Length: 209
Image 1: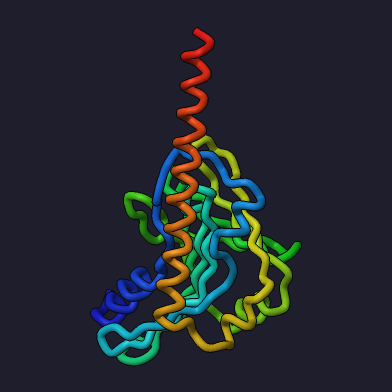
Image 2: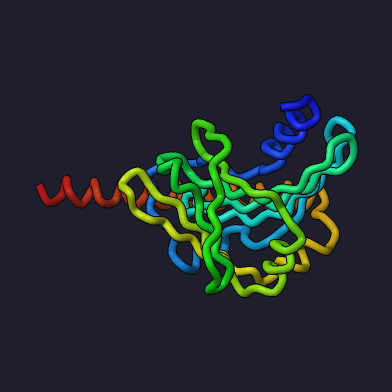
């Protein structure tokens, strides 16, 4: 791998910017709680090492802030140029099957895993104009990974709002920080609610004995 290709790969992995694990083993949120979690498509741009990086993302999290699936359409311009479509999922996945990408009811395309971190694995394919056009015309995508129990885990993501995020201006740094704070506040409240519920159940058990 050449130096420029190596830098492009490293920068694109850094640009994924998905939410890591903020908690584990907590219950899923209710439908009302899910609406409080920052969701949807958004664009974030930055500059690193004379390279302009823009990343159109959609991050799906569980009620406890735990990553379910992260989608990134990354474009590097400048000293290095690269366009890549990445999907990030939690660990505990079978590597050979990769991740299946299906747009609406079309045929699924396989994304091969390229790297795994302690808390997540990343699969990718080149980002083409055809793929972007399909996203703009589509209603939704289904991303399917295979867990260690050899069970398929399909995650559906609506494409509503994608075109606006892709063609529109990126979020300001203050907007990104506000988005992160809302998620952190939600996770903190969810943890408090879970702790209270657990204590109530323990108190009931003591009373019953």
